[in-house]
Amino acid sequence: MRVLFVLPVYEPARAFGGGVVTSLATLCRALAKLGVSVTVYATNASGTDEALDVPLGRPVDLGGVNVYYFKSTFGPKSIFHSTSLTEKLWQTVDQFNLVYVAAWFMWIGIEAARICQKKKVPMIAGIHGGFSARARKKSYLKKKLFRELFMRRALNSAAAVHLTCKVEQETSQDWLDNLPTILVPNAVDPEKFYPCSQSRSDFRARYRIPESAPVLISVSRFDWMKRVDLLIGALSRVKDWYLVCVGDDASGRGPALKRYAEHLGVSERIVWTGFLKAKDLCIALSAADLFSLISESENFGIVVVEAMMCGLPVMISRNVGVWEMINNQDFTIRADLSIESIAKSLSLFREKTLGSKIDKSYIRQVAIDMFSPQAVTKQFIREIQKFIQPQK
Image (tube, rainbow, N blue to C red; front, side):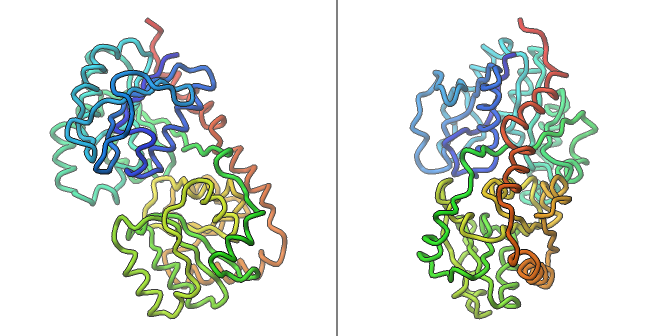
């Protein structure tokens, strides 16, 4: 089986947001390990002022995946179009059994769909949260116009749409035009996310967190949808908890959140680490007692699975896509979008859970069974085999 992924960006372009980039790269590598011939066409856009330092137009082997990078026509910060990528696609698309396209608000995606339709190669559309009602609110009129003029026709040529959870299906339904769908979650590599219990004391000492204090950790951008403000507010109701906030401040809301913490008198119990890479993130997660993602809208919530891989119980809102997959687990705590709900959950967690031993190995094993690359990729292969065409 030969599968081509047409993506706007690929590793190491994490400036565009590590979630989608990382999850697709994980899927590609896992497919290759299971014997699928995987090729990626992506631009060299990096999301910064400098383009990715990668060869252009020739294959780079990344974990068994043949990755071709092409010059982004409008510069390193833009991923709207790539003339050379389009030309390569015209020349080679009929060499593949299936094409996976994830660039639906860009010309790359529209052109890829048109080429696949012209060459009669089946295409799977990966939307990765881009069609959710909440995501569509940003630049709504532009997105609606683009959809009506270009996207709808292109998307309707897809054999199926890849969704990662039922929440994505529910919030995107009115833009899917009753197309067939496949439901396959995101994967997280357990070799990259694992408990680092031996570093717990060092992390706490570095940030002056008492060894006996209960610690809540949140990993997200400081985007308004993530509702980090509610976690800060809850700290004023539970006087012994500490909060570790991991993430960058691309939105510029960091100073306002810190002022809010000072106003409530809880700033001394909050640690702001900034963005952490995988190893350092594992250490931070392992130093905490509970992970939280209280989001107004979260397509999947891959950081929840990363926390589980590190053995942490999780407190999340029902708006986080992965909720419906893990809500029956004893280590999953539901919190509503209110300070009162979060504070109550923290108090109950301390009373009922911290006094007993948390089985971190069990939490990690559940995450591996459900979301490891091997488990997810086998499911993905079963789904796409319904649509692939015979080798030419």
